[in-house]
Length: 236
Length: 236
DNA sequence: TTTATATTTTTGTGATCACAATTTATATCA
DNA sequence: TGATATAAATTGTGATCACAAAAATATAAA
Image (cartoon, rainbow over all chains, first blue to last red):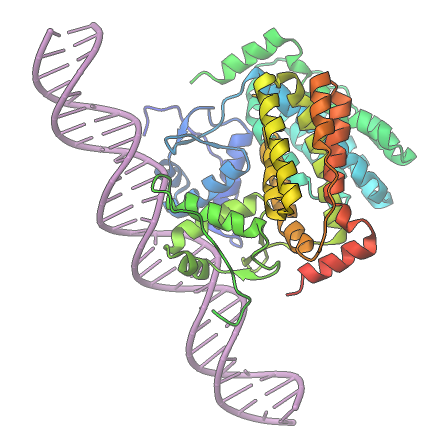
């Protein structure tokens, strides 16, 4: 119980409506996304149930769902863990994000009305503020919210679950890696995206989104730098 | 129990190794893919457990996994059902397939060696045979196998689960729709794909894959035809 | 100390049960 | 007959238990 690395879970308010399974799911999802569980660390149902003070049943269900979403990995031993990152996997995830999110953005463009544009602009301003404060955590959350709002403008959207799966797989590594950095310059490509939306220019929008995603990973520009981050995050 | 539409499940051999949950999952997945469960039909844990002659527990887990994969949908009532198709959703799923599978094919291309090419050619011949026999069921299975083998050539592949999710969402509708057709001409684009692979031509490969996917849906060419298939498949 | 073997503990799986919420069926009244 | 209220049945959820498989630990031999 205490020989292994600690699992720090800060669960959200136990909202009375909604099932326990739902709450456990959100708690674990957040913990994974924030890199609070080391990759490779074995997650046992009973231990998590003890930490969250619930019966094993909702944990079982949440683990299965998170595994299906790619956030966790079921090994041959039936053991569940946060997947370890590799350089090639990282590259594949980035390129997949670019391909799918550009597609989603282009498909959403025709549906973006004035109100939604305003909402995106507001999110962009909030990101600027968080940038000024150097609040990396907040930047990351708002950035996700910006992308989600953009893709969701398409009322027939079906790719968001796929995109979120990629975010889940990249999330833990991103957090661990960016926490090792003292500074992290971010060029704001959201303005370019907003301009492209106003111009109804799908290609420009895709360029802006692709650049935004690519520059979000710029901290691991060189293969050597990437490798060093991976080794640090996979110490287990 | 018998007022509702029947659920015809032909489960595979109960392989002794592997968990009951795994077996239930595969059984339900196949049933959904083959359109044997009407969209909108409420799936209850106990009923499925009775049909498959297992306890409710493995059914619960399988349903949750299938829901996370997009094969099933959890309504507000916590009821689970096969999602209903809409014209717009169908279009979005097709376009997403094209975008992601073209990406996956291009990323796999550099890794395809002689042995894998040979395997793809063999699958192509099998498809030709099934075509000659008019065995739609077999064509569909082999076609999936062809695409899967192609994308899997990339050893760092991470998009296959996303692609399979799209297949799961399209599958039931495709089966129901194509069963209404007497004939279904299929132009074989796999030869073009194989030629592109031999030439190491990524763009040509993407064109071939895109055309293959698009022509697989050609039976619903016009909006009116598509609408009529949707209405037929959603009678519930 | 290191390696191999035996024992204990822990773990995932699947079954069963209780209960509140929802659905379905039945009865009541216009 | 048709709408509405009441009762019965069914459902998902979460808890608990038993058990075989796996992991961790202890023991023996080199």
